[in-house]
Amino acid sequence: MSDITVYDILVVGGGMTGTALALGLSQQGWRVGLIEGSERSALLKVPEPVEGVADFEPRVSAISMASQKLLESLGAWEGVAAGRHCAYQAMTVWDGDGTGRIHFEAAELQARALGTIVENRSLVRALFETVEVSNVELIDGVQVTGSWLDGGRRGIELADGRKLVAQLVVAADGANSRMRQWVGLPTREWDYDQQAIVCTVRTAQSHRYTAWQRFSQTGPLAFLPLATENGDETFCSIVWSQDTDEARRLMALDEATFTAELERAIEQELGAVEMISRRFAFPLRQRHAKDYVATGFVLVGDAAHTIHPLAGQGANLGYGDVRVLMDELSKARAGGLSPANELVLARYQRRRKAENLTMMAAMEGFKQLFGRDELPLRWIRNTGMRWLDGRGPIKNRIAAEAMGLII
Ligand SMILES: Cc1cc2nc3c(=O)[nH]c(=O)nc-3n(C[C@H](O)[C@H](O)[C@H](O)COP(=O)(O)OP(=O)(O)OC[C@H]3O[C@@H](n4cnc5c(N)ncnc54)[C@H](O)[C@@H]3O)c2cc1C
Image (cartoon, rainbow, N blue to C red; front, top):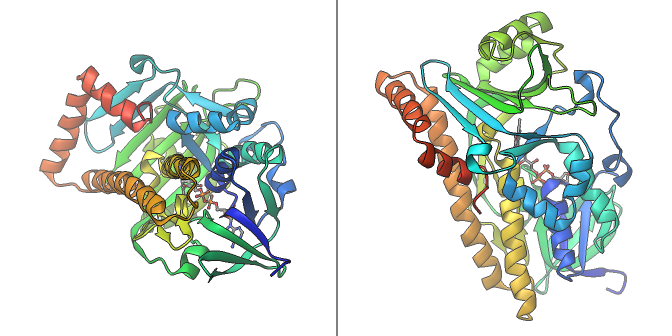
């Protein structure tokens, strides 16, 4: 037993959720280990300045103000702000099959921005730079290969044969969490029968620091504004979610035809679209763990839930988990309780399940509302969007909540 390292808390998975949580818990004074399969040198690599669309990472996240505040409190936002990031001031959403249109402005909400678009690798890099100067014990470049329960504590086995033990193990190992499977927490899941096509483009006109989203019956298309080192305002990241057959057809098109279809789909809102980077397609699946906790074990981020990217909330839900788990574990520490205390973990689960399920239901509602062509539904969404657009205070209240300006 003597060669087994014992931690208060072990976080498995150094993505954007696990790294933030490890930092927060270590700042509370717990002994925290963070295990990540990739090498730290790869995660800390600074990207080259942008010259063309291929230089951006195709996966980006729209970080809400609430998530930004969390990252600021952890000391990681400075690194995000020093790299490529785009604070967007407005959002326009419209119904491609009707007349409904709605527009949100940060200025109307007395906010500096509605949120910030960040390349995923830049966010993770900023978090790892903060881990490097923290008390988090980073174990990188090695996979977790198993987990067991050891007299009330959780054991972890690494691919190189090392064994670690903690009072609490947090699984932040992503959507296909092996940890969740080893511990035996079942999920409720179903296919949206859609794929998200992700790529980077350049547009003839400035994106005007606005996130553009057009809904059509086969799925939403988002143009998310990107910033460059030299202030170029013509790069956008695309998330084009389409029914699976349609997504396959689009993925098979040659570059010129795909570009023409994309231009048509966004209704030339930003002028001609050019220079399509490589396209990636992600199958979209809704997934929700029936329970987030077991003895000495808890799920956070995509390991607990994945949702449709139509409102760009996946990472923000993960940061909601981080905020609440930090809150509960800080109270446990102040009260001299173990981080694995059942009541503490049950409170975390109760608080997070309610919010995560509400968001998942809202995404499903949106998908159904825009995915159907019946006249009454078209009438409801078009009249509803126009009605809401004309009601400043109600619209702004809804937007402030959705953007995480009200926590
Ligand atoms: C197309 C698309 C667009 C999206 N757009 C947005 C958006 O605009 N806004 C937004 O908020 N969200 C968005 N999301 C969701 C967002 O990307 C995810 O919610 C987020 O990346 C999840 O982070 P995570 O840290 O929980 O998991 P992950 O990012 O999956 O991280 C898991 C980590 O665990 C490590 N790991 C896994 N298994 C092991 C193991 N056995 N041993 C050691 N390490 C392990 C992996 O190496 C990885 O680093 C989008 C998702 C998709 C698919």
